[in-house]
Figure (cartoon, rainbow, N blue to C red):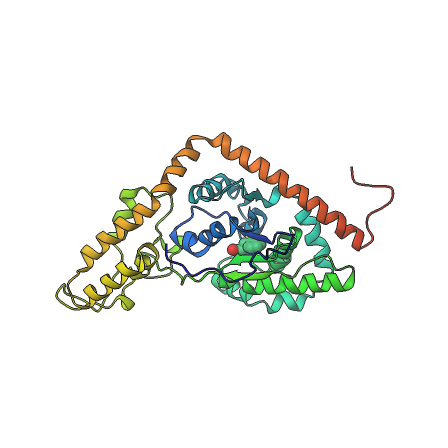
Length: 350
Ligand code: TRP
């Protein structure tokens, strides 16, 4: 697939310490193509060159779902199967669940002691979410503190790079400020991570709005090939091309960004010319799109079948990942307690 390389920390051959990457997702349902191209595709590319930690942010999900937190954990195995299907490899990446690592909570508490409330109140993502989720009462301490927990997630593993969408940049920026403040107040133990942004523009859903579960316009990674093909057929194309004989404009076509992700450059140029010359109609063009998309999804679907048939293996992968993550978390917390003078000689921790 044709993507520009991700900017960000590159592995420096003379650097003995491998760079670290961390990212997380809230388990709120099945993943769709927007999640795949917008996030997972980056995660995949990074796992070959960096030490990667990817986790399910189930505690973060409670900030907005506190009325029914019992629904959250049901999504965890589903999310893991989505991750493994797209090719996240537990041999290369540490895959884990936030709530299995209680150290996140401890670090969150310590960061909370010195994070100024105005930093949190100023956060644009906070304000934006409050407006978008106006039907929920989010005037809670937990919701305000969301970025502090996120900083704990990131700094626990001393991540250098955080692959996220643009909406998360303020959180990574705040993580840097929290790291700087900790390093200055106590002891310099944390790196200042940078956000690694995706180059992919936001994908629209089948109806032309942003692809989002709440709009019911998603193509899910777990959709069958038939369902995927049908959803592609329903995609809005160039609305200013009412007739087949009219010339089309790929820049106005809502299906075209998907072509961009699924076709090689030369083929893309051909389609563009044919569309503008009215030689290629939208129905045929979307047939092509369905073909190339389904073709790219084949290995993903094959892995999904495997993992769905082997839930024990998925559970083992998670146990192993949790174990590895916890080792690192324990190490960091020991350094943190040292830095703040809380490693007691007579160890109170059992
Ligand atoms: N806030 C992120 C989101 O909603 C999820 C998340 C939680 C995260 N902790 C993180 C992302 C740490 C990157 C790093 O998408």
